[in-house]
Length: 443
Image (cartoon, rainbow, N blue to C red; front, side, top):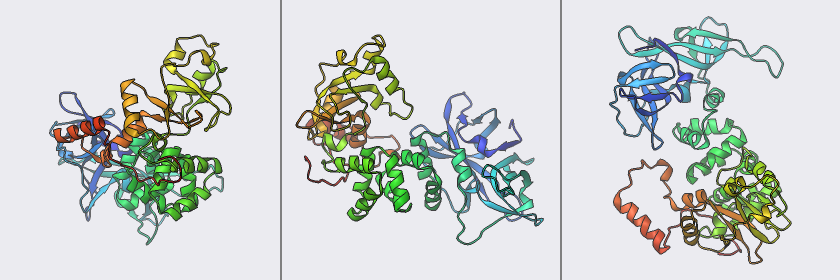
């Protein structure tokens, strides 16, 4: 192999190639097994291949590690990875653990682990990069760092003490929400809840939006009511409504009472619609401007980094007020159209005259047909008074149409399943995948 010592945290996200130079996937973790008198032995890598599937690649199949890439023999078992007893994931389970120095000099936290190629072949943990507790009272101070051999420390196993997730969170800080969600779901249940508990509210909200509803409920109910409400505040209203609908009604009301009033009002509003309608699929946070707004102002609004791409594809133009339910809906302006006009052009002159809004009680099947027929990214939703109440985006429809287990599906759909989906779309007999409560609103 081309390298003799590698730090595991730097391997996260490294590309794995086969001998021909074709990309196989990305490294997500390193798997080790403990030995009685020697440092833990590396048994393989956990690699994410296309389709978001995690597979095991034996260390014996790895021919080179270095320069931010890993070369394998090309022979990879694509069976989904399942952790066996005695196996430990370095990034997910070892980073953040507390160790005690054998020389009685105190304790430290593992921040990184180096693995080293053995003379007889194979790899094993060689050193730990650890951080001692800080000695200054300053909020910005950090403890001293040092390297130590595996034999120089022992792991602290205090009963009931939670393993720190700080280092793991830092390692995955650059992951997109969907990848972070997959990473969390791949952890052992207790570790998943621990890491979720230490994620910032916004980051956790983004990850929850990409998870199956059962895992959403499991994580949210372990956070405590106050923290759960804060996380719900950061979620898109439609995603928050779907999640609250899965909770016991009493708990859902408690969380709504703890949320910010403005956010809670949006969620309550969405909960009044049946899940198989435009009102049940829509989000209440599109970009809304007046007819006098200029192209320059519109482009500035869609450049916001926190705006979902589907919501940035078009701007809604209404009469005041400009919060749903707005004044009378006038039309939409697509961002490509804005790019064709000078910055001072008024958006009221650029409305798409061929796009009719749907009503909140329009069926999900009809919304799907409209998006597909006219190659749209979003469609506006109005009430009986032609006031804008939200927009349905293509990702909302996809999430609705896909089966409940689509996030964990291997991507090998058979012909029968595709035929059934095509039939459902054609006939309008689209199955329900959400359990949102139906209130007193349209259904």
